[in-house]
Length: 460
Image (cartoon, rainbow, N blue to C red; front, side, top):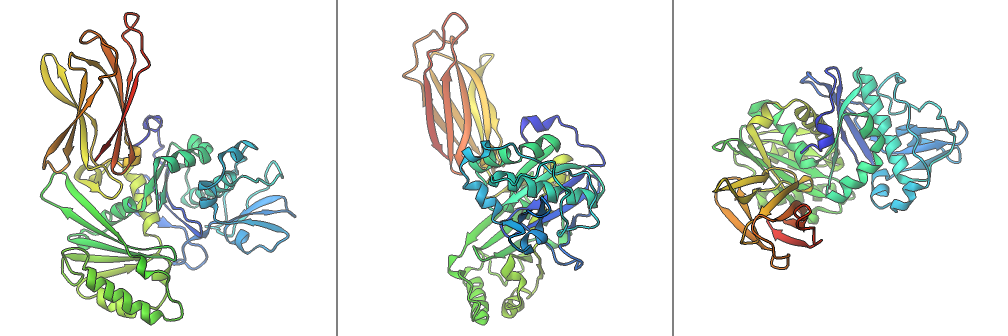
C-alpha cells in the first residue's frame, strides 16, 4: 500500500528506480530505468562480482567533510571519526536527540567517477560534525542513492529500502529520518525481505519457479529458510512464503566448517521443507544468501541441493528484489495483476463492514487481503441504526469461509436511529491483532459529540 501523499506525485519517465538492502555491516544498491527490465547492482570495487558498500560514515577532521563506505571504514583515527551500526543506532536512539540540530544533506548533483564506494563527499557548507544517529544514517543513504543516480544517469524516481524486520514503529521512525529524502523523491517505501524474495523470483525465467523455490539465508545473526510456492488454481494466483528459523545452526563453528556442512545437510534432510522433501522435484531452484553462504565450506550441502535442481549463490538477491518491487509499484505490471503474495507480514483476510444501504444489506470492503499488516489503515464514518452495533466481516482470501465480529456500543449515548454518527478506524497492532477504534463524532448541532471512544483488539 502506497501512502496517500505518494499517490499523486509524478515520477519522470527517465527516473531511476533504486532498491537498497540496508544492513549494519553492508548495504547493497541496485537500480534500473523505469522501462528497463535489466537491474544492475553497484559493485564495491573493480571486481564486478563484489557487491556491498560498508554501512559506515566518517567525519574527516582534517578535511572538514564526511566520507563514506570503504574510505570511512578504513580511515585512520584521529583524522577520521568512524560511525558504524548506523541502522541499529537509529532504531535505539533517543528521539529527543533528533531535535538537537538541523540535519544537513549532501549535494547529490555532482557526478562520481565510478560506483565509488570509496568516493568522498564534496565539502559541506558546514564543518560541524553531527552527533545524531538519525543524521548519520540519513547522510549515508542519501550518499548511496546519489551513487546509483549518478551511475544510472537519471534522477531517482523511486527508492525501496529492504529491511529484515518491519513494524509501524520502525516505519514511523525511518520516515522521520528520511524526511528530506522523501520530500525530494516521489516514492520512498520500506519492504520486507520476504517481499523482495517474491519479486526477485517472479522476475526470473519461469522455468526457475514453475514449481516451489527455496531460499536459504545464513548470516552471523540468523539461519532461516523461505519456501515459495504458487497456487495456480486461484485467480489471482496466490503465492505463499513459509519462513522457518533454525537457531541450532548458530553460532557458526569457524574452527570446524566440515561439521557445519554435515549439520546443514542433516537439517535439510530432516525438515524436508514441509510435506515435500528437499530431494523432491517439487523444488525448481534454490537460492543461497547471507555472508556464510559466500564462504567455501558447504561442499556436501551443494552436492545435496544440486541434485535435480539449479542452485544460485549471491548477496544481491534482496537489493534486486527491492528494485523489482519499486518498478512494479511505479508501473503496475504482470506480477501485480496476476499474483497475490501471502507471507508472514501479509493480512490473510478481506475486512468489510456490514451495512444497510437503500434498505438492503451490503458489505462494504475496508481492507484488502494481501496488504502488509503494518500498512493497514482504514477509516469510515457510519450512521448507526436502532441496534447500536457494528459488524465486521472477515473473509478468508482463499474464499474458504468468513467470520463476523460484533462490536457493541452499549456505553454510548442514547440517540434516535440514524442520529448516532461514529467514526470507525482500523489498523493492525501486529500481524495477528486487528485494532478497531470507534469514536462518537456527534450529529451536527443537534447532538454534539460525547467524546466516547471504544477500542477493541480482534485476533485475526
